[in-house]
Length: 325
Image (cartoon, rainbow, N blue to C red):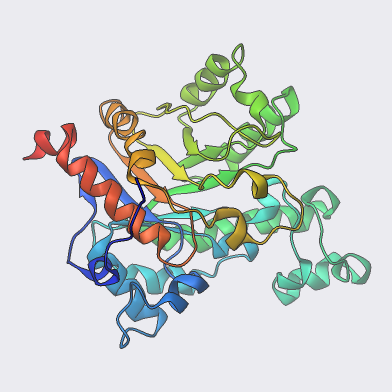
């Protein structure tokens, strides 16, 4: 059977909040470049960031912010978001790269922090947190938390995503680092791994028990399998308050290839059958926690929007829909 896209006009139907029982479905970026270029979702007269966010909230009840991974967020931006969304909307916010042991571009730091780095470090094309002066590292954590305070105080911060790289294996040092994250960020934290050692058969239960004991939400993922950076698609709730599911696409060849573009890596369109694999898993999560947030990160053109709407429709037609119907 050949999968045929629905008419692009169908992506604009609504308002249709993708919320079924305690499950909210959305996408990982409402301003992703190829989505805007496609013209498939936003009407031609919706052109400003503020209008796009308002329009987005008519269709989806949750969004994930990924720009915060590349640069520290600003408190004034978070305050503006609070004013533009309805009170039942929630944001997921991806942690700044330095907080999850990813490299970051020092030129994107605020000027005073670049000065505090010293000339040699500030001129580097990229840095890791371990290379930072302790006082700069501490200030980065403080500013990140302060910038999100308006969202948290308004009840709009669903989670902070701590997505750890494939060089973050399960070890005593890594476990201690997770403990420190919990102490430094007073928000709901969602933990995503890219190293499969956390989910190896003999370690998975211990990993889930560790997260559960600390109220940390495990991020269940759908992603390419069979690479050194592949985590199995296990749906698990480790927090009574929150479960997060993220769909990364299934581009196996691009998943672990150095230098691949974000569009190529995540630009995958799920078929209805592939989405349907997750319907019973999401329904089980919904029965084990108060809130399930499902984010489509297959960001290319209209793929994430279309798949988010398709999945929400499936959930509404299934067991969750019968509960609320």
